[in-house]
Amino acid sequence: MGSIRKQLKKYFLAGILVVVPLIITIYLIMLFISWTDNFLDFIPPSFHPRSYIPIPGWGFIMAVLIILVTGMVTTNYLGRGILHFWNTQVGRIPLIRNIYGSVRQLMESLFMQSGKHFQRVVLIEFPRPGIYAIAFITSRARVETIAKTGKKLINLFLPTAPNPTSGFFIMLPEDEITELDISVEDAFKMIISGGILSEDKFP
Image 1 (spheres, one colour):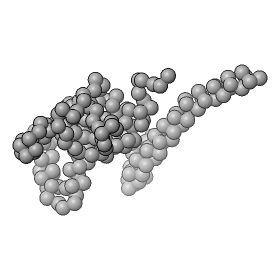
Image 2 (cartoon, one colour):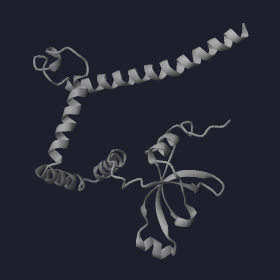
Image 3 (cartoon, rainbow, N blue to C red):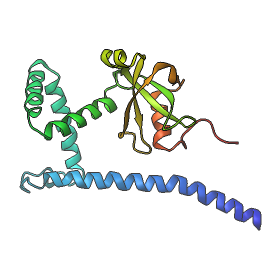
Image 4 (tube, one colour):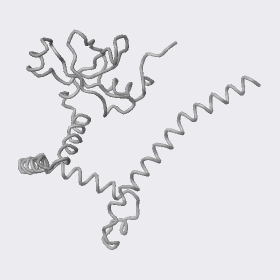
């Protein structure tokens, strides 16, 4: 009887690990689709796409199309000029320029696979000696900073868990940084999961 109970418990836990993430994922997708559909409420019913093809998700479809068209426009010569003009004008508005600039830089860091933002994964002692944290090399420190300190400093981004979009910008001497042989993507997985998504497990 005990072995049957253990087996049922094993099956139940295995089912939870499959069903619960699936339900939550579907729920969040449907919630997002419903949220984007509200953006089209200003369209008169006679012109609304739902009147001709009654399916949910028209707001999401329109959002994707707008993003694609915007990307097509801003990647040609004329579009780049318009984008430069737009960024210049936004950059003159107090408060808004800080928010817009920060969000834009964050999006570029997350989605532009240029390899220029998070170059390598490193291990540092933080917040005190004996405690280690994962950080990302972003660039070398400014020449003036290196001249003032007399040390070969490296710019680092130290993300917080489980939200890696926030964190600390720190500068450390190169000899206090230990480079890790893991990819940026794997490091982000470890940070977001709090170390759960790691290849090495305790026995």
